[in-house]
Length: 368
Ligand code: ADP
Image: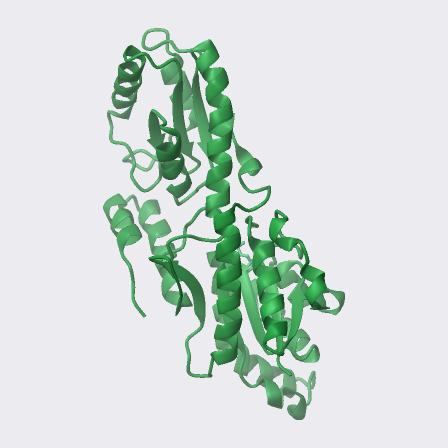
């Protein structure tokens, strides 16, 4: 009987519980035993009670729960080989030879490293006398499949990551609330949303709420952004708009790589020699992460969870580690490392202030 473990890792996102529910139930449906690893890689390193067998009813009602009920953590030990060695031992002691990980690009990078090292980790465990040669025999090959849980929608190769539409919905809801009061007092609001390297949330929130102006990392404003913004806002005011909404991603930059902060934008809108608007800043913060998943994320979590279990059962030593994506509305498997690499390249391009490359990379699809 195959034993499949499911884990959530890195930053949490709405929909992770839907993933766990789908994987546990699909695994059981396929005649396997389902396990959950609590607290991400930390649980794999700690072993013991962190690795628990799950039954069908254990995940009842999880689709409508926010966050991740099996916990997530950052695990320093897993960055180093000795940590991964203990993790491998704990998997074998629990009889687990397949792992489904739902997390961001960091978690998926760790997963790929773990799979690549697996044979040498087993050899080391035997030569160090931690395990007997017969014990490792059935576990020569480790299957790993990734699912992308992230509110930022920051992974290449998939149209949406699990959680991004829930976060976007929450931002839109918050902006609607702010707009009502902004309009009453004829105020301006600078709203900061999450996204250090990825402006998807800010961009889509701007479109979905009809914001006056946005700032995102991938497409920095040029030197006259101050003038541009004031002109747009003034134009909208002249047309009769009683509120001003500017959405700014955490990682917003100017052409020279300098941070554009909410305070800078606020001071400009409030400048007595300019627009002189009564301006407030709202940082939405962790409200964007919490709460239940919207219908789209529940659907994505369920369909991708089912596909992940299928992928694990069909994997051979020759298949590359894959993750489950959605492209053009189809659930598909894609090679993991290409996607992680592409996400890293974008972050690097932004850091190097090569914004044209960052935008080009965002648009590029890669094939298997
Ligand atoms: P996310 O998955 O949301 O991007 P992190 O980057 O913090 O979040 O990664 C989550 C965990 O994954 C880390 O705490 C660490 O245990 C593991 N991890 C991340 N990157 C690596 C890596 N390069 N090698 C090994 N483990 C990693």
